[in-house]
Image (cartoon, rainbow, N blue to C red; front, side, top):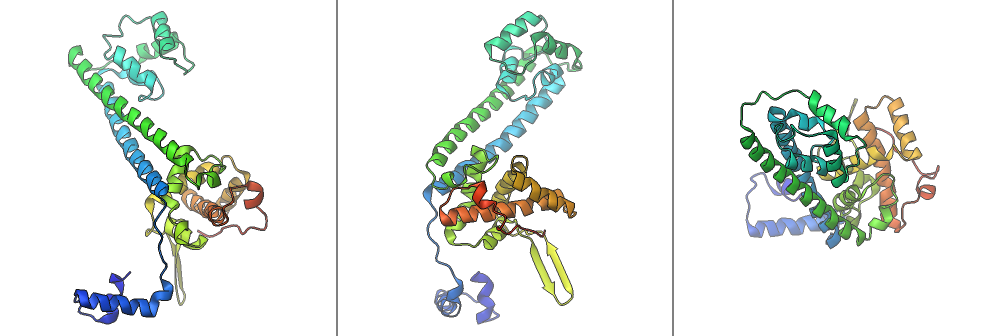
Length: 321
């Protein structure tokens, strides 16, 4: 803000400590009523922010490692990619540990596969015979790499995927511990379809903003849920707000989109916006703005979210883009 206002005191943009001191004092004299006093953010809020951001980074890394594993298997062991729903699931990684190549699974029978599934507490609902049929009907690999080398490559990649999966689980455990101690958790834990991780993201990214004394409208702008309106004469445009916290917008967008599947108020607000011709991303932002007003009221009043209170017919409903 201060750097943008430098032209007020001259066009040269010359800089010195004494001149900066004068400019800051003059700015405080003329515009001090527009400035807010900032208080340090709650430590637990910063901890949730750090943990949830690290988890997001690890999830992106897991996606990359899982895609690499899938590509490796498609080239040398295609049947293994069609056996279980998620290639990074524990049962899938255990199967690749035991059967890293087609040759290792050549003598596999339905009975042996059933025994393997029982040992690893498989809950996918498929029998050994059904899964074995998937292996037999899968395309054959055209690879000429020896089974010994394929085993080394698959074991290496499986180890990387397993390590990142365990790291994410460890982070989620830490997130839950910090979240349980956070004062905002009690206020927002009753929100529809907000899981532990998403709630931690919302509190970590959006939580510091109400602490700065922002209004609901300012909060919506900071999070990127409110559009940017430009009006001059006969020109009136409404556009997407780029200057916002992307992490906060993503966290709230995820929650708002999930909430409409479980909350009648959210579903109704979403549908009415769609009926007005709004696209899905616009509609989710409108819904997110409505949820932000509720969260702002909860944090302002110290009252936990209650649909009977916060979905009152007298409460204004957000509209627009």
